[in-house]
Image 1 (cartoon, rainbow, N blue to C red):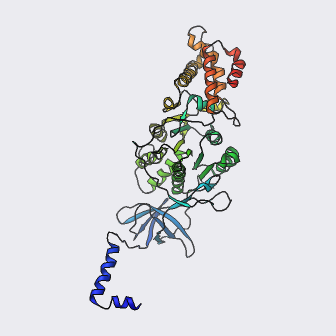
Image 2: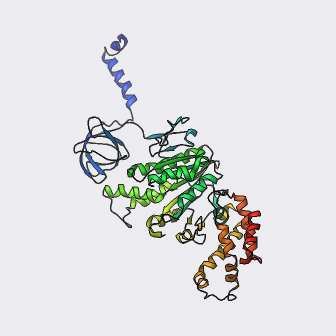
Image 3: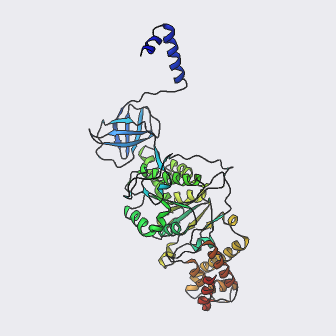
Length: 473
């Protein structure tokens, strides 16, 4: 204390101390943290005055003397600030005090995440206590990789599903869309891939799904074995739209974390449509004009920002192979979200309601599906066999109605005749029970056997013999 008084006892000492403290503050912008208050709430959007904060800032809204909620700044017109509640909104009153929060918006990360279920804020949902062995903290905003520095997709990824491994081969670092209407088996197919994939880590994002489906997916579809090497981020449909957005970003961030550890990661997000709908709710609430079928323009800028974070890293050691489900309303593949997703993804797998109604599972329509990186990750022989099977399958579908009513005359077209003969075998090949795994090597060998049978003398009468030969392969 005596030394401090001596430093300020003279004008020179005072000047030196002011210079010293001025140097510490040089280059820093210090803004006052002021409280604001709510003046309006319309739908989901809250308007506050008296705040000078940036977009994305977390704030505390004082509902009562003992209760608060968290909100995030999502926009501002003039001197007012738009906020959206991070969680469910109840008890908001006019004039409620709004205070900016200084803490950073980060989440725990580490290998202790494997086998756990968390929400969009990184809080545990499975009732197994706090996260253990998660020493790192992650921001939701991952680093952007220069597109010219990304390693190309050149290695196949085994997903354990024969129809995909053989006919729509997936590459490590690829981004695929799973397009389907409601009730045709999207979640079941995701569960199969989660259990049977050769990826080191699986990150599952359940965005905007019914709460009952979240529990059923984890306990029945995923199971104990599938959950052991998986991280599940769940945000049910009754969560606030901001929480649903956060859950999708958190799932992507966890996938980036494991990729940075050199792991091969399979990211399954169900669904990209719910993510877009959450962004639509926020944008419309703050006054953004609707564009295509009620979706504001910001929705179509958010989708690529999320999707482009997946893929290979610059070193080639880690990779995120991402599969996003896209809910096609009314089975319309021209839905705005489906159309935007199809344009930016590296391929799409279409599930057919007609096949599902016929008991064909998984209900993959290989005629309408495509993997754009497939030629880069498989051999020329494999590609030729897959194209042959797809050609016979497509030829049969083109003449299906004529064949069904007996209007097609056998012998009028040799390729159609062959398609009719091998169609039962192809359909059997494309089906797979939930409890069966077909690895990539087995799927490829069975595809070669099927291609040889399709070109040989195996007709419908020899279906059992051909399938036995395929299974032996």
